[in-house]
Amino acid sequence: MIYEGKKKIWADYQKEIPEDHYFYVRSCIRQSFFPASEATFLNITKKQLGKDIFETEHHTTCGGIAYHSDTIPHETVMTIIARQFALMKKYGYENYVCSCITSFGLYCETLETWREFPELQEKIADNLWKTCQLEFAKPKYLVHASDLIFKYRMQIAAKSKYKLINKQTGRQLRVVEHIGCHYSKMFPSKGVGGAEYPYVLVGMVEAWGGQIIDYPERRHCCGFGFRQYLIKGNRSYSVSNTHKKFESMEPFKPDMIITNCPGCPYFLDRWQYVIAETQGKTYGQDGHGIPVFTYEEVAGLVMGYDPWDLGLQTHQVSVEPLLDKMGIEYDSSTKYLGKNGKVIGEPKKPHCLK
Amino acid sequence: MIDFGFGISPSSGINLNNSDKDTFSKLAKIEPNVLKCMACGSCTATCTAGNFKPTSLRKAILNLQNGLKDEALEILSGCMLCGKCTMVCPRGINTRHLILSINKIYGK
Image 1 (cartoon, each protein chain N blue to C red):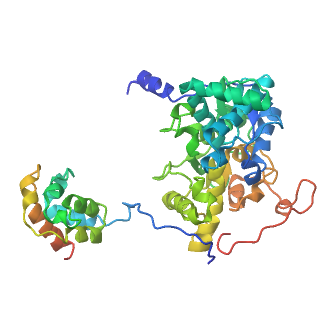
Image 2: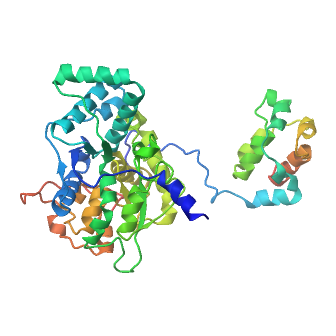
Image 3: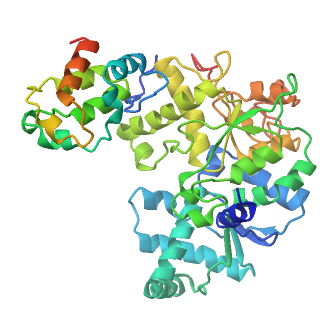
């Protein structure tokens, strides 16, 4: 092997991620699916690492869910996105970081469309001025929030309280990493490692002590797929996708799954309940499922955050077996208590899934 | 069990770890030429029965390699042993003999 040649090829799969000064936009669905993930991202980057991450309450959804379910046209979405970029410029930023993979894919698609069709860009800039009186702008760097956590992974590792290691046996935790399809499958050059070797989550897991496992359906979609889920009659497509992935990863006995998309952790988590209740099958140890996490939740766990402050009680698959493996201390009696100390309500126990 | 109004569709995926490879090895032992097939499809293109039925030796071999015995036998059930495929096979496989061996080993 010629090392220099390998290095040159691998350079094509790298992505430039600025160190600091970002305009942050939240996801519309992540805040209800995994309510503490974005707060944890801001806590880690701003408070613990001292980075300049700015967010404003004036930004909106990117329109991705409506666009991918065929309810609004591309031009409308592009105008919404132009408004988000214009807000970034208005607040004096040129690096744009978004929390959602659907948004990230759509931003990439929009920027590429504007590059290829400058007359369309002109039209959108005109729409933006007429509707919002805002000046058109494009970000100098567009990154996804997982790119930033990937960039800071060694700083997070240096501040870590726990490792992705089984405290009882001393062996590395076996981790399945699942990348959102819209991260780099559409525009490979926009993701760390491209579409062939996505490294963004692998890098985090390796830096925090875990071991990545490879399995046949590793790059298969989680099953979200918008139309596959939004209409009840189509949900067999969605759950069948997820089932295929779990059947494929089961022999490798994963301890946990880490994801970087809003839909993937939700469906990989919730469909385990549906598979258990319809097939009587569970994929974890002793009737448990395989716990699924967002990358912010995993970063929060290794940094010693309280699991209930990370919102892990909102998961369908119980996370306690993993917390026990990692040796993380937690108080079961406070699991369903809100910030004000009042009970937030406890879900009913499933029949099959522990 | 709960009825959600939707469920898991059967997968078309083939798990080679769970498929029967022993019988194919047995076939390859008495018909080593089966391993020479490069799936060019000449046999299928020239097949008389293939004009009327889904007869295709190429597809049948692929199915046997994937452990799909019943599908393979069903595909070959229309074969009239005319031997046209033997004449066009670029690898010189005695396809008629191969089909007879498949039927013998796989039970029909």
